[in-house]
Length: 208
Length: 319
Image (cartoon, rainbow over all chains, first blue to last red; front, side, top):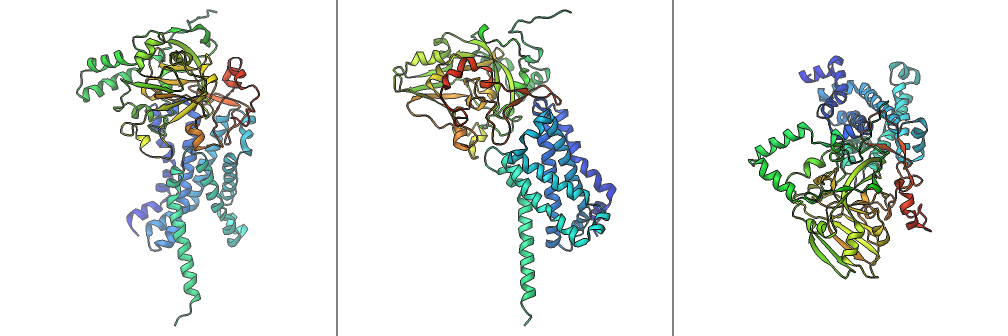
């Protein structure tokens, strides 16, 4: 195991990394970023949404990376923290929704736009994340049974499509940003599917 | 209780250039190896509005509303020619993009077409005035802006359109060397906007050349831009180089991009939602994190002045 991988595996080194997005907010605050001053709620809304999205991409990249590089100790260390990473996605999504409440101002305004697909996709993704967050502990794995737990947690892929939609519809021209954020995930998942198909074909073809 | 009654043209402290901006500019000039006096002096002398003191038009003073701080007006800009990021436009629009001298061409179905320097145009229409207008962006935020400029109808009187002129088509500059946003992306540059001739003749329609009594900053559309306060902000095309009087309705840039979301009229209307968000209310720029929204007014509060332009028109379809 490489030294970096060993450090990365330690909770006390890895967990503080989840606070990086919050710490990075010091930059716009210290530089009095006009976008932050002009409409702080909107700024935080977009910022937290993006933090959640990027953490989500990292989380979902881990499994395909393991398939591609089964021997990498670095990726093994990452995989060790996969559930914690998933929870950080949920935590930032929760903050995103709390800020959305303040952005809209009142409860009536908050719920008004839920019928719009743009908002609905975000709400649905959050509800799914909530289900995954609640069942992320070991007790839930035991209670549900490994197979059912795994099935339930495939909701992550539904969340992926919802987030892609949510991100893409808020872009005003083209889908450049969405493509940038999700490209690694799409590439890796495609590789993973390709590997799975190859393995299946190998199994089917009898040895000569 | 003592009530301080300010004159409507009173500038808040925030209108002044902040110390840090001032210092940064000096540093920049120093770094560029230029005499600060020479450069600034020339710039002030030539910019449209400079040398044309504006008087507040008391018909448009909006005393009940507080003007948005100057720093936010010039720091929070949608100007895709430079960047998709509202916070980056100020910097990018001031890196060598020349907005003076500036010639504007007016042609089409008019008896008196012209190609004219902006400063000469201001002289011809008899100078400028100040008007405080509400500004409502289609993204559901709003400002209050003290513009300097002249009524668009004065320009129309100058060029004398004939009966074939039904619409005005405005075009902005095209200069990808100076405007990084024009080097690519999904927008068909240059930016185009349009008005019906009746809308253009409405006394509210303004060609702005200044803000807060100073020449309009590059990022706000120097040296001359359209201001139609009852419409969403994107109708207010910036840095105009051409105005054509035509007989067919022009296809404005945002309608070409997303016809389901943005139409030709783009009148502020709290009852017609954007597909992604409600237009019933708006966030006031600069009012902080916990400020709740304020209700959006029909035609942005200018119903009395403009509603008659749309008699018999289904505003739900003609958004």
